Image (cartoon, rainbow, N blue to C red; front, side, top):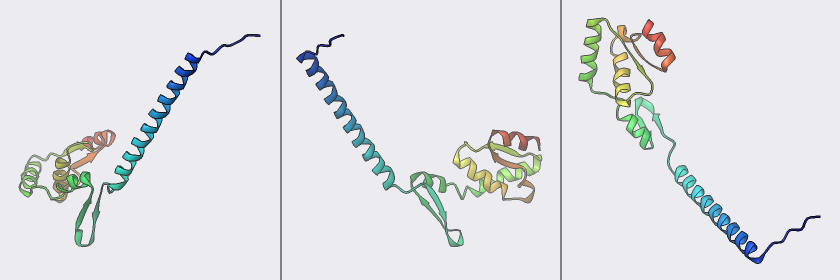
Length: 132
C-alpha cells in the first residue's frame, strides 16, 4: 500500500489556488452577464419598411445601411448611360461596400435592359452571371 502525505503548506497553496480560480470564474460570469445585458438592450439590426415605403432603421448597423437606400441619382444616371452605351454589365459580390450595393440596386431598376445585366451575388453565382 502506498501512503500520501499532504503538508500544511501544500494545503494552503491548494486552497489559495482554488480561491483564485473561484474568483476568476465569478468575475468572468459577471462580465458575460453584463455583456449579455448590453447586447439585449439594443435593437436587433433591421430595417422596417412601413406603409408607403417608409423606412425605420433599428440599430446603428441598420442606420448605416439605410443611408444608402436612396443613392445619388446623378451617379446612377451616369452609370446607366455608360452601361447602355457600351452594352456592358456589372457583377459584384455581396460583401462589397454598402454604398456601392445601393447604387447597383438603383441602377438595376433604372432601365429594363439593365435588370439582367447587374448582378450582386456570392462567388458561385457571380461566375454564372458573368457568363450570361
